[in-house]
Amino acid sequence: MRTRDRKQKTPRVTRVFAVIGIVAACVGPIVLGAQTSNDTRAAILLTLPASTRALGLGEAWGAIADDESALFYNPAQLARVRGWSVGGSLQNYIASTTLGAFAIAVPLRRGTLGFGMQLLDYGSADEIVPAEGSGGQVGTPTGSTVTAEDMVFSVGYGIALGARHQLRVGGAIKYARQEVATYSGGALAGDIGAAYTFLNGWEMSAALQHMGSSLTLASVSAPLPVTWRAAVAAPLVTANAFALRPIAEVRQVSGADVTGVLAAEASWHTGTSGTLLSARAGYAFRGSTDARAPFTVGAGITLGRLQVDYAYEGFDLIGGATNRVGVRFAALPRSP
Image (cartoon, rainbow, N blue to C red; front, top):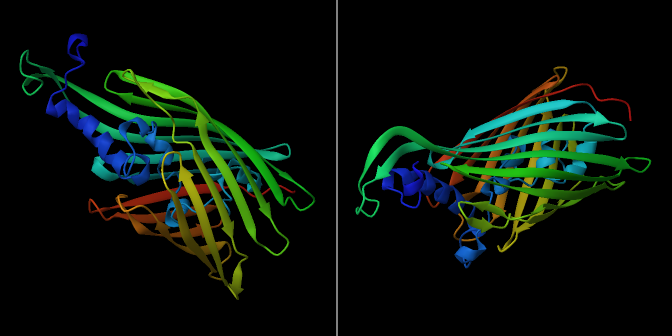
């Protein structure tokens, strides 16, 4: 886009920015409700799903996270990954955007090191040079396109403490970057988390996420969506080859209301060596302006060291739904 015209956008160029607004609106309390424009948070990607397994549970994942995606929800739970594992997931998100995540976890000394990347691709729109005096309503196509995307790169470490590894603590640092047409900006942030397993099987976890500097894009600066989350998981309820675990989580994004999720994960060992079937469901208590449907569901199959997962999330206010698919591979766990 030509420098002299950067302050003017025609409707076609503006579509990239409009898509960003639609996606932002669908995370509800972060940019809607009683907030003013001054309360808008940057790096909306940090508030979106980063795991297929987590999405199926309404993202009430922190208390039971046991794979590489723990990096995105509570880095302390990386310590539960006792053998290297790698996984990725992808979904066609709203307004023709693409949302995905990739992570790898590698045991290192007494803990586990995790690396991850998240991506939100807004797509592209034709670049148009506005005609002088048109107020940005008339222009000439240049033949080029403008694109927009958000990216987050994370590294974290979780360590287990105690004779039974019942206490886990961890931290992560991340770099969030946004690119819109010729503009770009980035910000550094950090997460801290802790989790504890009681002798009776109850699990508790808490994390404080996205603490960092503001992100500046096109001369507009906004803070990151600092988030706290706390979760509890009941002991497994088992009956022969079946197992069920109820989960509850509360969380809050800075400047928004406290929200909560009730969820459950059921699993069934089929009798075939290494084969496990899973089903997940979550119900989220959200604000009335949140476009997402309260229910999410998911399923998965584990074949030996390979796992494939699916999650479904609907959107009540705007209609439609999204489907996310994830694949992961885990090596045999190392000895404690």
